[in-house]
Image (cartoon, one colour):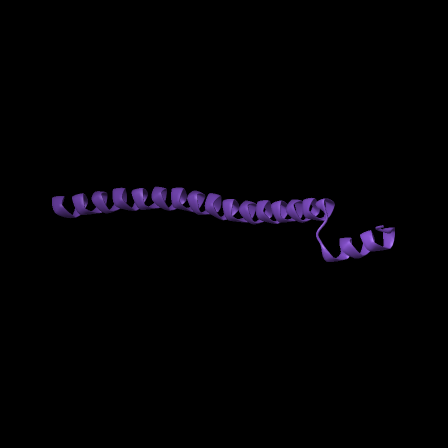
Length: 73
């Protein structure tokens, strides 16, 4: 006959359903945290790209203006 002590010993050796659920939840949480970090970096990169694109456009306009003024002089 299996005693409670035997069951306790088996629970130390094998993963229980509850332990597995806890581990899965922990892994999910860690994964979501890492994905949040990555998505924050992607968002910041896209915002920087938008700003840089605007600056490049402004520089192109200024260069064209300066080249036009040089050619007319």
